[in-house]
Length: 90
Image 1: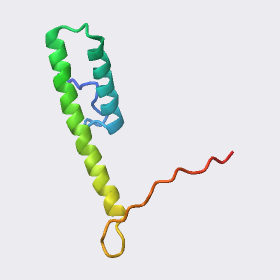
Image 2: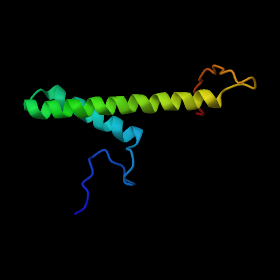
Image 3: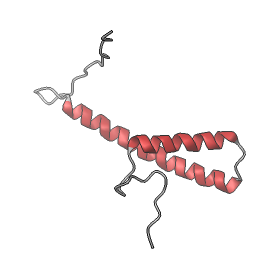
């Protein structure tokens, strides 16, 4: 029998992408804000939402560490580089 994958699973079967997980979390929040779900379904969605929030936080922390490592100066000390959006070309 084929393995059933959740809505947030990626096509490759590995961990879902950040954007897909975030979209699922937003859908869960929207459904729960409606307030018309049975208690059991609300609890299941809440549990899924907490797991997604924790996974997203871990992904954000990993991305922050990676960016920090990429902007380290020659002495190995992280440098803060202010983000400046590109000027509009029009």
